[in-house]
Image 1 (cartoon, one colour):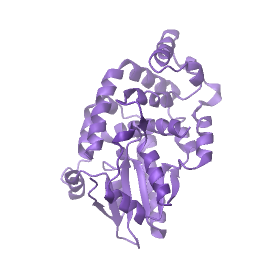
Image 2 (tube, rainbow, N blue to C red; image 1 turned 180 degrees about the horizontal axis):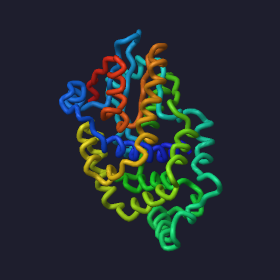
Image 3 (cartoon, helix red, strand yellow; image 1 turned 90 degrees about the vertical axis):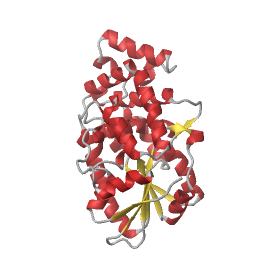
Image 4 (cartoon, one colour; image 1 turned 120 degrees about the vertical axis):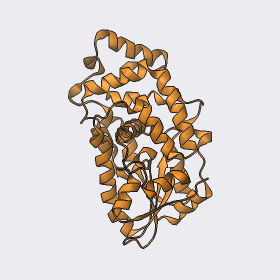
Length: 305
């Protein structure tokens, strides 16, 4: 069940990324931004202002080949130094896993068949059966964006995939760190109730029709992530199919980042926090790193090899 929730989190990661990349910061020479690119890291230390102890921000990737997920000594030390670990959602909470599938359904009894012509629905149904080996009847009422996430395991070049969050959760437990969430699974699912189901359905069909293109870009994105090249990830998304639409940026990204910053300002006063969220949330003028800086914190890159 937990792996399903992690896979479904992929939709928010990729659609958040594409929204952010469409509006790159005009401050190309900003020393903070430039420094982050030169250091090629996914791990950052937050100090200054009223903080008694440093906190940490780490950019994750929601789905990788399990053998590719490795944590540096610096990351392990940072996690050990923190008092609590915050992820986008609390994957360690049984209620998150038990309620996850419930919140994935469309409201008012809406079904996928209602969003397509007969021919379009047959195409989607055939793809899920032939390519994913999943009968559509299992997902007839699920929000189309979540079905987009079901395509991502098909893009993996390995048989055993995992989420960076899932492996990080294991490490947290080994270090006896409490895991909490910045959002609930209910909230993440509700994000997609704010976006017309008809538009989501078109995106699902687009992903199926252009699957080879998306897979190629997905492969490149994984390489850039493994190399911790945040600037390269931004550039890739800027010119890719992932970055083709600016709709719903506020819902998918900006408001969520601002909500997280509001929480972190309070949380970091009380204790040292290790924050692990999708790497797409770190970059750009409205990304967590710049938002923290604008709040007056000192944000420094840490070597993470």
